[in-house]
Image 1 (cartoon, rainbow, N blue to C red):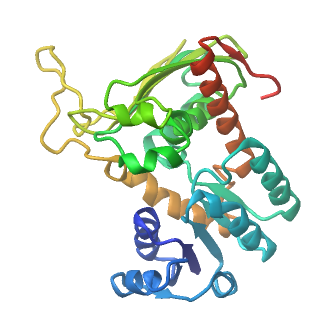
Image 2: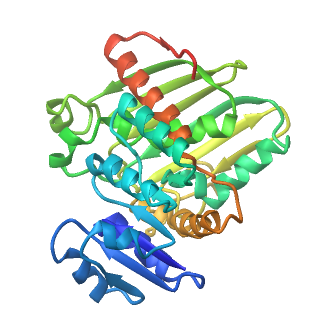
Length: 331
């Protein structure tokens, strides 16, 4: 099997490395719009080969991963499905709801499998959490709690183009939590503050935020996200139900210090960032992508479902600015 990777920045190079390590992948073809960048990446990564343009890439692969900037995703994704190439596209596939809805309509008409790179869905523990919920082992869900904190803030120059904390940081939980609960969100409330650095306010953003989701069946979820955790990168999801209470994301590297005797203490090797915290998820993501290409498993992160999280992110931003809950219609 040959897989293409378009975009060989930090994320694209990580994905190419994981793909090249899979037994069923014979070669990884690399393309980047920046001249010379793909050739340089290929020289440093065994099992890869650089190509000069997107058409050449798409004409010689069984599947393609898109890890280029967000504003290039719609054009590249349309090119890929136009050639019938199964695609895994980093989130988001488009920058606003109208553009994404039109793109998803094109994907649906094409019949080509398109996966969106929400890596939480591929994390083994979260994947197992979803399985247990679907199997009825958790019972009726009462409450979901999700925490997602960066260890260090992103580069401040990135903030004006980030889309804000709800579209950038919390978008992953706005995708994952409704997927876990399996019900539509009917109401959103969000609040945020600038506590880390003035640069976030200058970008018309916040650096700490809390979201409350209300689901159609009456369950609630609380999502908390922040741009600085002095102990390390932290992401956890807890599900409390009528039969069980489960958590994903608590292990020896979780950056959390308990004051209870014998309680959890963060070690010096606490997770420094999301690539380390979600390493198993990213490896599993590439493996499942190849299985989807082969028709061995169902698409675990279809393009149409990514529209839900973007709509919720926009509702969060509206709620933060207005100070009032936002009803979600037809979600």
